[in-house]
Image (cartoon, rainbow, N blue to C red):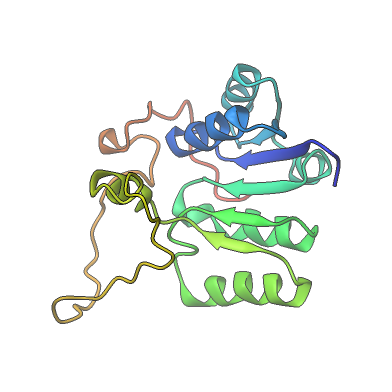
Amino acid sequence: MTSILRAGVVGAGVFGGYHAGKYAELDGVTLAAVLDTHPERAAALAAKHGGTGFTDMAAFLAAVDVVSVASPASQHAGPALAALGAGKPTYVEKPIATNLEDADAILGAAGRGGLILACGFLERAAFRAMGLFDIPEKPRRLEAVRAGPAQPPQPRCLGGDRPDDPRSGSRPSPGPTPTRWR
């Protein structure tokens, strides 16, 4: 890796924008690249933070040291596997995958490569609201315990996985949603 960590974000939507902005704010880190299937979105988000937009996975991976996958959940596996296959430490927004086979493949790729893999869970906001970041002695460990019985998953759309879903906070897609990353 270089002395300045070159970060790359897969996905130029709302969550990709959050990741890009956070990388751009960090000392010792530069947002080097944004990958999206919509070239204009990748270019716009990257330019906002001094990076380069990409639509080609190989070129994107050559430009970065670490990767955040913030694409729609149905598109997590391909970019995560490509990043891990290229030897890049990888952060994947939740869910890590939309099926067990893809999740196992992602975990296996990280394990075989001895790479750091993290799956995002945005509880930092809840911890801040609870005041855990403002107490004199910082917690070393937090544990979540289910208070009720586990329920089988129910098919539903919570928004956010489709660019044309008004609940996602993003704008409508300029065309059909691509189903495959190059």
